[in-house]
Image 1 (cartoon, rainbow, N blue to C red):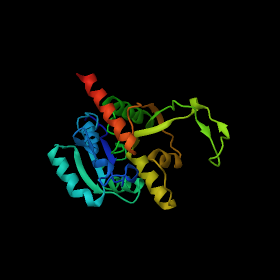
Image 2: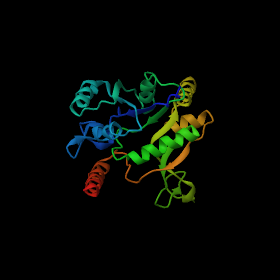
Image 3: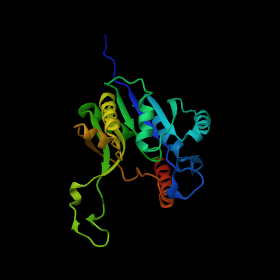
Image 4: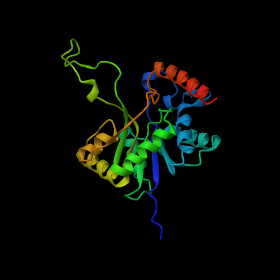
Length: 238
């Protein structure tokens, strides 16, 4: 009998309030070239052959709207739309608890407001996770990075070659990710990403070089930049 290939699930947290954008519309639902940002993101995973199933977390008030968008854009891989929690970590955990993933299956976590993730990068982080059990996309900073304890003056210049700007998707075996979240909940530990939770239980993540196009839309400037990136990527396809 042929052994079962581990399934690949993608969790897409998109329950943030988006207050830094200063808009009445939550950032994940803001239009980007005629479509909500979250739809751009989900369509990448919809068309990615390496991903089997997608689950998304949105604000409870947006559940009906998200279901409508799924139908409109024919997002067949999105099997679950879950109400998010107070923080990003809560939203991911709300989804994680509903997935029928075996411990050997892989789970990707990708920010709903990173619409320019490429399928090649998704494939690379999945492959690295299969080999190492945990993998994270990241890029190195282009600018000089300095440290300041009080904010008034610089204390030190950091070695840029040793620094990485972490992106998503981040990929883990389902068993590892569940254990990391269970420990975090017991200890009331909150972290900014899943890699930090996994590191807390002693699992290191393999670095996979990301892309500078893979921006997270957080500010009005990011939305303007996203429009330029979209146009450049579309022109490169023609």
